[in-house]
Length: 222
Image (cartoon, rainbow, N blue to C red):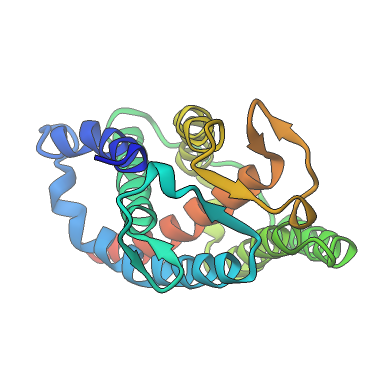
């Protein structure tokens, strides 16, 4: 069994085990989660395939099963299903067990952040991964300014992002330390937290934010 596969299974094990826990009953939300994976997940997988083909990052075959589809190992496809599955479980626990508070986040602030991230993307245009990850954050704040204002104003959303960074630090370190995932030094800043490229923090933010936006679009109808 590949090390990357083991990491994926550990990521999903807890939330899968507690999917039938009565206070949350997460299994009832799987249709909304499937929609998020089919929409946001497809976009991020397409991005992942493209940047892998471009050489922005790669995967160490020593830690993989050796099964690939397009440019990506099968474990990477699992990652884009298991990570949102587990992180949105955190969001559902927050909804079930914590009181939601309103966070003041006016539309102008979202637009200003969007512009700031797009400007950063332009400044670092020559660094492929940096450019794309900053642009993805800019695109999220632009979309949220018009379609996700309730998401930005929810304390549950911000706690979901904050708490998700805790397992992110553990599991991304496990992926980047051996390394299982390798990065082209010309595509990134080169600044790392432990072993994790700084860009990965922005990548995680935009990915989990877009997944939740798609998830909530269907969940609200349940």
